[in-house]
Length: 270
Length: 252
Image (cartoon, rainbow over all chains, first blue to last red; front, side, top):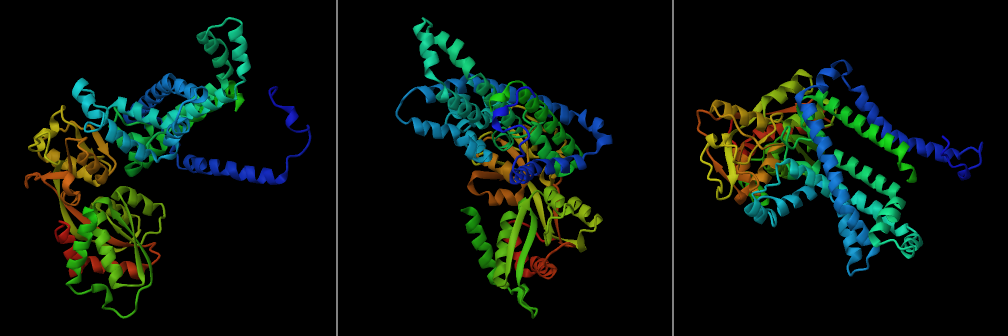
């Protein structure tokens, strides 16, 4: 723990007891449901349950679609964050609001909106299907799109905040030393917001992995094509609780592993 | 809108017959929680409001969902008074677990029907189209009754469906058909009726169709067992059966 910050409190000083109690209550809220899940886990059946088709298909689909959604969010979300943070344009606060909308909207509403816009009979979906034959609902691409829609705000918000808090003098100094705008972005700006970028990408991936409502509404539910882990858990809960619990356990394990590793390595900034 | 209009129709129809809930002496007081299959949503809303009208002290709360998830809720200790399932299998599991009081009784019957978007844009003609991989076909997930029935119907017809989505319940399936995103699906006949103008029904031949039994029972953990028993009586009364008939259900 060489990275701990000793200036926060004097060594040996006790944290206030009220904070300890309230903090532990907060932790309990997270731990108790997890304990419920572990208590219901059929441990001896686990190997058989986890190697079934349903689980492996859903795990593979969840990993690929959530990673693709994160990649797309990085390619289009970071430029969007840069524009909102750095360019003065009319209606900027409205754009900020629109970008955060998927955070507030129930995902089912987001999925329905996607269906009305990009479905076969949708505003854009109908001409798109007519021109290219591409039909997004009920396809893996539809899952990626729903994931990106719901998860990208996390990246945009995090990166935008980092860009706004950045000391502009570093970039100005690089520019006076002869660096072009592209070089400044690549060599100064991006490295300086690096930790926030990683944090934003992690949150985006985690949200995409857990996505349920928008996915089932827009992309439907078919094993191997659109049935991600959360959808598989939901359907399995109806009939086969052991499989549902096993699937939930996979989600918890994968998410926890990635979040803990990232937090230890790169996510010290937050 | 269609739902409201139909609920109003159910109400007037019921008003003409005798009110079953008021013929015993003591007035009932309290809240009744009815866990009912999603396909009963509209008809139980109408039955519930008529039962409330007949018993002014009673408030009926509907807890709607797939029969399987409602059964699971009861097994996990949800405080419901009455359970109405869209199949006998889920009810049997509650009986086995000792969660019901008395034997469940079938109060209504339903049939399956092919549902297509208004105007039938994909020109679906029958169950055979469900095997066409070029069409977008939706069913309920096999874990919920409407999905199990659909697979039974397709099995009877010797059709292996090329499914594009297994929807979590019948209402979700109907929404996607009404939006025109799915070319066809198999739902209950009553759901096609209550979906209004967005969905059209195509009859399934009698020899491959299935009869859907809806059993109802009061629950052992019912917070209000007396109101629960009275509500079940009401469902079987002339008034209750008339409302069911108005929504396309047939009497057992």
